[in-house]
Image (cartoon, rainbow over all chains, first blue to last red; front, side, top):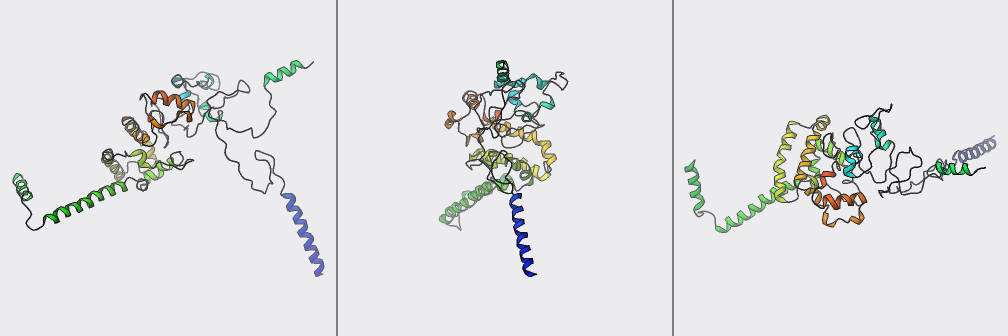
Length: 155
Length: 195
Protein backbone atom coordinates (compact mmCIF):
# COMPACT_ATOMS: atom_id res chain seq x y z
CA UNK A 1 0.00 0.00 0.00
CA UNK A 2 2.74 2.37 1.05
CA UNK A 3 4.79 1.51 -2.01
CA UNK A 4 1.85 2.16 -4.33
CA UNK A 5 1.31 5.56 -2.75
CA UNK A 6 4.97 6.45 -3.24
CA UNK A 7 4.84 5.48 -6.93
CA UNK A 8 1.65 7.48 -7.41
CA UNK A 9 3.28 10.48 -5.76
CA UNK A 10 6.35 10.14 -7.96
CA UNK A 11 4.24 9.91 -11.10
CA UNK A 12 2.20 12.91 -10.00
CA UNK A 13 5.36 14.93 -9.44
CA UNK A 14 6.70 14.01 -12.86
CA UNK A 15 3.41 14.91 -14.51
CA UNK A 16 3.40 18.26 -12.69
CA UNK A 17 6.96 18.90 -13.85
CA UNK A 18 5.99 18.21 -17.45
CA UNK A 19 2.95 20.49 -17.21
CA UNK A 20 5.00 23.25 -15.59
CA UNK A 21 7.62 22.99 -18.33
CA UNK A 22 4.97 23.16 -21.06
CA UNK A 23 3.25 26.12 -19.34
CA UNK A 24 6.48 28.10 -19.45
CA UNK A 25 6.01 28.55 -23.18
CA UNK A 26 8.29 30.69 -25.30
CA UNK A 27 7.20 34.32 -25.19
CA UNK A 28 5.55 35.79 -28.28
CA UNK A 29 8.18 37.43 -30.47
CA UNK A 30 7.16 40.99 -29.87
CA UNK A 31 9.41 43.98 -29.55
CA UNK A 32 11.73 42.02 -27.25
CA UNK A 33 12.11 38.59 -28.83
CA UNK A 34 13.43 35.59 -26.90
CA UNK A 35 12.81 34.24 -23.41
CA UNK A 36 9.77 32.49 -22.07
CA UNK A 37 6.56 33.82 -20.60
CA UNK A 38 7.73 33.25 -17.03
CA UNK A 39 11.18 34.71 -17.62
CA UNK A 40 11.94 38.33 -16.99
CA UNK A 41 14.27 39.55 -19.70
CA UNK A 42 16.60 42.51 -19.48
CA UNK A 43 15.20 45.71 -20.95
CA UNK A 44 17.32 47.13 -23.73
CA UNK A 45 18.96 50.54 -23.28
CA UNK A 46 16.77 53.43 -24.41
CA UNK A 47 18.00 54.66 -27.79
CA UNK A 48 18.66 58.33 -28.45
CA UNK A 49 16.11 60.60 -30.11
CA UNK A 50 17.14 61.57 -33.64
CA UNK A 51 17.84 65.31 -33.49
CA UNK A 52 19.02 66.25 -36.99
CA UNK A 53 16.32 68.76 -37.96
CA UNK A 54 15.99 67.08 -41.35
CA UNK A 55 12.54 66.42 -42.76
CA UNK A 56 11.86 62.72 -43.16
CA UNK A 57 10.16 60.98 -46.05
CA UNK A 58 6.44 60.46 -45.64
CA UNK A 59 5.26 57.00 -46.66
CA UNK A 60 1.96 58.35 -47.99
CA UNK A 61 0.69 61.89 -48.50
CA UNK A 62 -1.67 61.88 -45.51
CA UNK A 63 0.97 60.66 -43.06
CA UNK A 64 1.47 63.06 -40.16
CA UNK A 65 5.12 64.12 -40.51
CA UNK A 66 7.39 62.77 -37.77
CA UNK A 67 9.20 65.25 -35.53
CA UNK A 68 12.85 65.61 -36.62
CA UNK A 69 14.06 67.01 -33.28
CA UNK A 70 14.04 66.41 -29.54
CA UNK A 71 10.94 67.43 -27.62
CA UNK A 72 12.16 66.65 -24.10
CA UNK A 73 10.33 68.69 -21.51
CA UNK A 74 7.95 70.32 -23.96
CA UNK A 75 4.74 71.20 -22.14
CA UNK A 76 1.53 70.70 -24.07
CA UNK A 77 -1.58 71.21 -21.96
CA UNK A 78 -4.53 73.54 -21.60
CA UNK A 79 -2.20 76.23 -20.23
CA UNK A 80 0.44 76.28 -22.94
CA UNK A 81 1.66 74.51 -26.05
CA UNK A 82 5.41 74.57 -26.61
CA UNK A 83 5.11 73.15 -30.14
CA UNK A 84 2.89 76.02 -31.23
CA UNK A 85 5.44 78.55 -29.97
CA UNK A 86 7.25 77.79 -33.24
CA UNK A 87 4.80 75.95 -35.48
CA UNK A 88 1.64 78.05 -35.16
CA UNK A 89 0.63 80.33 -38.03
CA UNK A 90 1.69 83.44 -36.13
CA UNK A 91 5.04 82.12 -34.91
CA UNK A 92 6.24 80.03 -37.83
CA UNK A 93 7.74 82.93 -39.79
CA UNK A 94 9.85 84.12 -36.88
CA UNK A 95 10.99 80.61 -35.96
CA UNK A 96 11.31 79.53 -39.63
CA UNK A 97 9.54 76.33 -38.63
CA UNK A 98 6.97 74.62 -40.84
CA UNK A 99 3.48 75.90 -40.08
CA UNK A 100 0.98 73.29 -38.96
CA UNK A 101 -1.19 72.48 -41.96
CA UNK A 102 -4.53 74.08 -42.82
CA UNK A 103 -6.32 70.95 -41.62
CA UNK A 104 -5.42 71.93 -38.06
CA UNK A 105 -7.48 75.09 -38.48
CA UNK A 106 -10.66 73.24 -39.47
CA UNK A 107 -13.39 71.58 -37.51
CA UNK A 108 -14.38 68.03 -38.34
CA UNK A 109 -16.81 69.22 -41.03
CA UNK A 110 -14.05 71.08 -42.84
CA UNK A 111 -15.23 74.50 -41.67
CA UNK A 112 -12.31 76.92 -41.19
CA UNK A 113 -11.50 78.10 -37.68
CA UNK A 114 -9.52 81.11 -36.47
CA UNK A 115 -7.32 79.10 -34.12
CA UNK A 116 -6.09 75.53 -33.84
CA UNK A 117 -8.93 73.06 -33.55
CA UNK A 118 -9.10 71.46 -30.09
CA UNK A 119 -9.06 68.00 -31.68
CA UNK A 120 -5.72 68.86 -33.33
CA UNK A 121 -4.21 70.60 -30.31
CA UNK A 122 -2.34 67.69 -28.74
CA UNK A 123 0.47 67.34 -31.27
CA UNK A 124 1.89 64.06 -30.00
CA UNK A 125 -1.34 62.20 -30.73
CA UNK A 126 -0.15 62.07 -34.35
CA UNK A 127 3.37 63.53 -34.53
CA UNK A 128 6.19 61.72 -32.78
CA UNK A 129 9.97 61.95 -32.70
CA UNK A 130 12.02 58.97 -33.90
CA UNK A 131 14.71 56.98 -32.16
CA UNK A 132 18.15 56.31 -33.59
CA UNK A 133 17.55 52.58 -33.84
CA UNK A 134 16.56 50.04 -36.48
CA UNK A 135 12.84 49.28 -36.70
CA UNK A 136 11.83 47.07 -33.78
CA UNK A 137 9.51 45.02 -35.98
CA UNK A 138 10.36 44.47 -39.66
CA UNK A 139 7.52 45.02 -42.11
CA UNK A 140 6.84 44.64 -45.80
CA UNK A 141 5.36 48.06 -46.45
CA UNK A 142 5.67 49.19 -50.05
CA UNK A 143 5.49 52.77 -51.22
CA UNK A 144 2.55 53.46 -53.56
CA UNK A 145 4.97 54.42 -56.34
CA UNK A 146 6.58 51.03 -56.01
CA UNK A 147 3.18 49.27 -56.06
CA UNK A 148 2.13 51.15 -59.21
CA UNK A 149 5.43 50.43 -60.86
CA UNK A 150 5.09 46.74 -60.14
CA UNK A 151 1.50 46.54 -61.36
CA UNK A 152 2.42 48.39 -64.55
CA UNK A 153 5.27 46.00 -65.17
CA UNK A 154 2.91 42.99 -64.93
CA UNK A 155 1.70 41.71 -68.31
CA UNK B 1 16.26 114.28 21.79
CA UNK B 2 19.18 116.41 20.72
CA UNK B 3 20.52 116.56 24.31
CA UNK B 4 20.25 112.75 24.56
CA UNK B 5 22.26 112.42 21.34
CA UNK B 6 24.80 114.93 22.68
CA UNK B 7 25.25 113.06 25.95
CA UNK B 8 25.86 109.76 24.09
CA UNK B 9 28.26 111.50 21.73
CA UNK B 10 30.08 112.79 24.80
CA UNK B 11 30.40 109.25 26.25
CA UNK B 12 31.63 107.88 22.91
CA UNK B 13 34.26 110.57 22.61
CA UNK B 14 35.70 109.98 26.10
CA UNK B 15 38.43 107.40 26.60
CA UNK B 16 37.33 104.27 28.44
CA UNK B 17 37.73 104.46 32.23
CA UNK B 18 37.35 100.80 33.24
CA UNK B 19 38.35 98.69 30.20
CA UNK B 20 41.76 98.45 28.66
CA UNK B 21 42.37 99.34 25.04
CA UNK B 22 43.37 95.72 24.38
CA UNK B 23 40.08 94.39 25.78
CA UNK B 24 38.06 96.83 23.76
CA UNK B 25 39.81 96.22 20.45
CA UNK B 26 40.05 92.44 20.85
CA UNK B 27 36.53 92.23 22.26
CA UNK B 28 35.23 94.32 19.40
CA UNK B 29 37.06 92.12 16.92
CA UNK B 30 35.70 88.89 18.39
CA UNK B 31 32.17 90.29 18.70
CA UNK B 32 32.45 91.38 15.07
CA UNK B 33 33.37 87.87 13.97
CA UNK B 34 30.49 86.38 15.95
CA UNK B 35 27.83 88.80 14.72
CA UNK B 36 29.00 89.02 11.13
CA UNK B 37 29.65 85.29 10.92
CA UNK B 38 26.34 84.55 12.60
CA UNK B 39 24.50 86.81 10.19
CA UNK B 40 26.05 85.20 7.16
CA UNK B 41 25.56 81.68 8.52
CA UNK B 42 21.88 82.41 9.09
CA UNK B 43 21.69 83.94 5.63
CA UNK B 44 23.26 80.89 4.04
CA UNK B 45 20.94 78.60 6.01
CA UNK B 46 17.97 80.32 4.36
CA UNK B 47 19.72 79.88 1.02
CA UNK B 48 19.38 76.11 0.79
CA UNK B 49 16.84 73.87 -0.87
CA UNK B 50 16.17 72.21 2.50
CA UNK B 51 15.02 75.57 3.82
CA UNK B 52 12.85 76.30 0.77
CA UNK B 53 11.01 72.98 0.87
CA UNK B 54 10.47 73.14 4.62
CA UNK B 55 7.35 75.09 3.58
CA UNK B 56 4.64 72.92 2.04
CA UNK B 57 3.89 75.62 -0.55
CA UNK B 58 7.28 75.02 -2.13
CA UNK B 59 7.57 71.29 -1.40
CA UNK B 60 4.18 70.32 -2.86
CA UNK B 61 4.09 72.62 -5.87
CA UNK B 62 7.26 73.92 -7.44
CA UNK B 63 9.65 71.33 -6.00
CA UNK B 64 7.54 68.41 -7.28
CA UNK B 65 7.53 69.99 -10.73
CA UNK B 66 11.28 70.52 -10.70
CA UNK B 67 11.82 66.82 -10.04
CA UNK B 68 10.62 65.90 -13.54
CA UNK B 69 13.03 68.23 -15.31
CA UNK B 70 16.61 68.04 -16.48
CA UNK B 71 17.66 70.54 -13.82
CA UNK B 72 16.93 67.90 -11.17
CA UNK B 73 17.94 64.61 -12.75
CA UNK B 74 20.25 64.15 -15.73
CA UNK B 75 23.03 62.02 -17.16
CA UNK B 76 25.92 63.73 -15.36
CA UNK B 77 24.23 64.27 -12.00
CA UNK B 78 24.89 68.00 -11.83
CA UNK B 79 21.76 69.63 -10.54
CA UNK B 80 20.38 73.03 -9.69
CA UNK B 81 18.78 73.69 -6.33
CA UNK B 82 16.19 76.42 -5.71
CA UNK B 83 18.64 79.23 -4.76
CA UNK B 84 20.89 78.48 -7.76
CA UNK B 85 18.23 79.96 -10.03
CA UNK B 86 16.18 82.13 -7.71
CA UNK B 87 18.82 83.95 -5.62
CA UNK B 88 21.74 85.93 -7.08
CA UNK B 89 25.16 84.59 -6.08
CA UNK B 90 26.84 87.97 -5.50
CA UNK B 91 26.58 89.20 -1.93
CA UNK B 92 25.04 92.63 -2.52
CA UNK B 93 22.53 91.32 -5.06
CA UNK B 94 21.76 88.47 -2.70
CA UNK B 95 21.00 90.87 0.17
CA UNK B 96 18.75 92.91 -2.15
CA UNK B 97 16.86 89.74 -3.13
CA UNK B 98 16.61 88.64 0.50
CA UNK B 99 15.05 92.00 1.36
CA UNK B 100 12.49 91.52 -1.41
CA UNK B 101 11.81 88.08 0.03
CA UNK B 102 10.23 89.69 3.08
CA UNK B 103 7.15 89.88 0.85
CA UNK B 104 7.29 86.10 0.63
CA UNK B 105 7.36 85.85 4.42
CA UNK B 106 4.23 88.01 4.42
CA UNK B 107 2.64 85.64 1.92
CA UNK B 108 3.59 82.66 4.05
CA UNK B 109 2.10 84.18 7.23
CA UNK B 110 -1.17 85.15 5.58
CA UNK B 111 -1.42 81.98 3.47
CA UNK B 112 -1.50 83.64 0.05
CA UNK B 113 -0.72 80.36 -1.74
CA UNK B 114 -1.34 77.81 1.00
CA UNK B 115 -3.51 75.55 -1.16
CA UNK B 116 -2.91 74.09 -4.60
CA UNK B 117 -5.88 76.07 -5.97
CA UNK B 118 -4.54 79.35 -4.63
CA UNK B 119 -1.09 78.54 -5.97
CA UNK B 120 -2.44 77.84 -9.46
CA UNK B 121 -4.49 81.02 -9.34
CA UNK B 122 -1.32 82.97 -8.56
CA UNK B 123 0.99 81.06 -10.89
CA UNK B 124 0.92 83.57 -13.75
CA UNK B 125 1.71 86.45 -11.40
CA UNK B 126 4.53 84.53 -9.71
CA UNK B 127 5.96 83.42 -13.05
CA UNK B 128 5.84 86.95 -14.41
CA UNK B 129 7.86 88.21 -11.45
CA UNK B 130 10.58 85.68 -12.22
CA UNK B 131 10.53 86.36 -15.98
CA UNK B 132 10.81 90.08 -15.25
CA UNK B 133 13.70 89.58 -12.83
CA UNK B 134 15.65 87.35 -15.22
CA UNK B 135 14.95 89.65 -18.15
CA UNK B 136 16.21 92.63 -16.14
CA UNK B 137 19.46 90.97 -15.05
CA UNK B 138 20.11 89.35 -18.45
CA UNK B 139 19.37 85.85 -17.09
CA UNK B 140 22.19 86.16 -14.57
CA UNK B 141 21.21 83.03 -12.66
CA UNK B 142 21.19 80.93 -15.85
CA UNK B 143 24.59 82.30 -16.77
CA UNK B 144 26.09 81.32 -13.44
CA UNK B 145 26.32 77.85 -14.99
CA UNK B 146 25.53 78.30 -18.69
CA UNK B 147 28.32 80.59 -19.83
CA UNK B 148 27.88 81.85 -23.38
CA UNK B 149 31.66 82.22 -23.89
CA UNK B 150 32.17 78.50 -23.39
CA UNK B 151 29.25 77.25 -25.46
CA UNK B 152 30.37 74.81 -28.13
CA UNK B 153 28.07 75.40 -31.08
CA UNK B 154 29.37 72.26 -32.79
CA UNK B 155 27.86 70.23 -29.96
CA UNK B 156 24.46 71.90 -30.31
CA UNK B 157 21.62 71.03 -32.64
CA UNK B 158 21.14 73.11 -35.77
CA UNK B 159 18.17 74.98 -34.39
CA UNK B 160 19.99 75.75 -31.15
CA UNK B 161 23.04 77.08 -33.02
CA UNK B 162 20.85 79.30 -35.16
CA UNK B 163 19.19 80.91 -32.16
CA UNK B 164 22.25 81.12 -29.93
CA UNK B 165 24.63 82.46 -32.57
CA UNK B 166 22.27 85.23 -33.62
CA UNK B 167 19.72 86.48 -31.11
CA UNK B 168 21.61 85.46 -27.97
CA UNK B 169 25.06 86.46 -29.23
CA UNK B 170 23.91 89.93 -30.23
CA UNK B 171 22.19 90.47 -26.89
CA UNK B 172 18.87 90.87 -28.65
CA UNK B 173 17.42 88.06 -26.58
CA UNK B 174 18.32 86.56 -23.25
CA UNK B 175 17.91 82.99 -22.00
CA UNK B 176 14.49 83.50 -20.39
CA UNK B 177 12.99 84.92 -23.59
CA UNK B 178 12.84 81.42 -25.08
CA UNK B 179 13.52 79.08 -22.16
CA UNK B 180 10.39 79.57 -20.11
CA UNK B 181 8.95 76.70 -18.12
CA UNK B 182 12.18 74.68 -18.11
CA UNK B 183 12.05 73.91 -14.40
CA UNK B 184 8.38 74.30 -13.48
CA UNK B 185 5.01 73.98 -15.14
CA UNK B 186 3.91 77.00 -17.11
CA UNK B 187 0.96 79.20 -16.19
CA UNK B 188 -1.74 80.03 -18.72
CA UNK B 189 0.43 81.54 -21.45
CA UNK B 190 -2.32 83.54 -23.14
CA UNK B 191 -0.88 86.83 -24.35
CA UNK B 192 2.74 86.04 -23.48
CA UNK B 193 5.03 87.15 -26.28
CA UNK B 194 6.12 84.26 -28.47
CA UNK B 195 3.41 81.85 -27.28
